[in-house]
Length: 423
Image 1 (cartoon, rainbow, N blue to C red):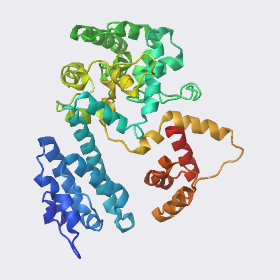
Image 2: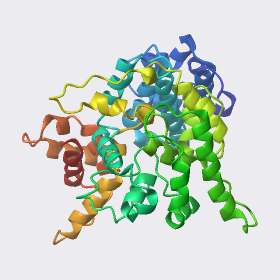
Image 3: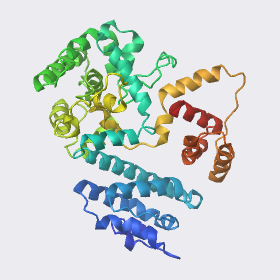
């Protein structure tokens, strides 16, 4: 029966028992919104999976009914992640629930990126500040500060750890006491194995390519094309004796460009390309589309008011503000408009390595048993949060701590990580 109603509006979904009119109103509210074609497509896709868990959704009490698509997506995502009764789900319903979550995450990212098309600088930078905790803004800024200290050093003269930090590959060599950040923020290149191999073997060739990109002033089409020609030549030479050939990958190139000029370039990963393209309303780029990246993606952000913002004034006696630091990397920071929850900051490679090193100094270790019961996780967390000495920012992250405990981490471990992140 459900298969016949996937494309019907939520007010036509089959219900039994007492109808939750507030949830019904939430599910159907996008019908009355002025949706773009992309947003309408997302909504129609979401309805397919809403139909399969409609009764479970109707059992959730909601009080918010946003009148915009971004608010709607965030509200329903919160329902799917934190409010639906997982104990009442049938095994076959977990898959559509996960599909719906993925669709809503994409919807949030696309809607937030859509804001950048019209946002003036104050709104752009305020949004980034508002997302500081979940997007690990402090860590990202520490990475960029470090990159600024090595930017003038040729790749061929960098140490292995410096070159990997510049290119976006975090390893155990990145001693946490020195590299107090995840070098893969914005765009990691760990999966680009041929790129990493060639960078290690022929760093001078990549230096030649990057030399075409000036360290100041707007980058011109000719300068970008000169970089691309040199970059492609590295892979063409490598592929001469390879039967399948090897095309130059776009994503690692954008990481190099963005570290060279974070005010001019967006750093891509293959997993981000589709969402960024939809959010910026441009045609989807392929994994080797260097022309589309420059003409469509970079061309689009160059029409944005925030990108044309003049450098903020800085009083001589004051430290450089967050606004100033973001301005120096304003194109790169469009990454913060992608959806994230607090788990993103907790999964920093820097924090993981720091935690691993600290465990080595511990005389005993305990096997962490995965918490399978949501109620048990809540009880453990609530007991820990009863400690009045804990700061307010920890007290306010109860749901995030519960999620991490459910994933198998001890509550002490999670609180310790949060202290490391938020100070």
